[in-house]
Length: 321
Ligand SMILES: NC(=O)c1ccc[n+]([C@@H]2O[C@H](COP(=O)([O-])OP(=O)(O)OC[C@H]3O[C@@H](n4cnc5c(N)ncnc54)[C@H](OP(=O)(O)O)[C@@H]3O)[C@@H](O)[C@H]2O)c1
Image (cartoon, rainbow, N blue to C red; front, side):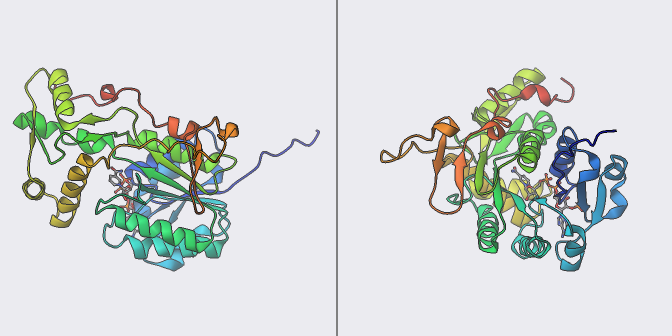
C-alpha cells in the first residue's frame, strides 16, 4: 500500500472547555479536526463526561495551580485561553496560563479578550488589557479574539422581562452589537485551525447594533405582549442587578458596561482607513490596517463568521411565544 501523505497534525488545547463558550468551541473544532488532536481542560473532572464521550482528551487544570497547567500543556502546539470567569483574580490566573504555555513551547496562544480592549474605558477591560500586555511580553506568538457582548446576556433576562413587562438597563440610546456564543466559538475554532494567525487582532461583534429599546420592542413583538425598556441611572441599575441575585462587584461592572454602550463601547468600529502615505494592502482585499506594535487588525473570514446582517432573534425562542 503506498504511503499516504499525513495532514499537518497539530495538538490543540482549549481551556475552560466545560464552560458555555468552551463547549461550543470544542463542537466547532470537531467539525474540521479529528477528536484525537484536541485536548480540553476542565476544572472539575467529574463534570467532563460529555467532553470525554466526544473522544477529546480531557485534562483537569486549575489556573491557580501551575503544576496542573504544566502537565496539561506538554506537547501542545496551539492553545486557546478562554478568559477566566473569576473576575478580579484573572490577571494572576492568566499569568499562570501564559507562563505555563511558554514553558511548554506552545507555538500559538489565542486569547478571548474584550472588544477594543486596548482603548475601552469599561471596568471589565482592565484585566483583558493586562492579559494582552502579559502575552506581548511573553514572546509567545499570539492572536487576540476581542469578543463583544454575548447576545445571551440579554436573552437570559427575557423570561423576567416577560414576567414584569419591562427590561431594565443603563444603556440609554447606546447601541450594542452582540453576537451569540456559538458565533464567537466558530471564530475561535477558525483561528485555532487557520494557517497564519500570529500577531492578529480580531475585533469581533455582530454587524447590526441595536438599542435596548429596540430589543424590548422585538421581545414584545415576538411574545405578543407589551415589554418596554426602562433606563435607570447606573447606580440604580446596579442595585436592581444585586436584587436579582448578582454579587455587588459584578453588578457594578455590568452596570458600568451598560453605560459604556452610550459611549460606543459595544459596537465594533471599522478599521481606520489606510493611512494616506501607505498603499492599500491588496493582498488582504484592501481591508487590512497595521497598527504600531506586534498586532495587526484585519477584517476577514473569521470576523465574518460572527457578523450578523440582522440581529438573529429567531435563534432565541421566547418562552410561551
Ligand atoms: N463577551 C461577553 O458578553 C461575556 C460575558 C460573560 C463572560 N465573558 C468572558 O468570557 C469567558 C467565557 O464565557 P463563558 O460564557 O464560557 O463563561 P463560563 O461558562 O463561566 O466559563 C468560564 C470557564 O472558566 C473556567 N474557570 C474559572 N476559574 C477557573 C480556574 N481557577 N481554573 C480553571 N478554569 C477556571 C470555568 O471552569 P468551570 O466550568 O469549572 O467553572 C469555566 O469553564 C468568561 O469567563 C468571561 O471572561 C464574556
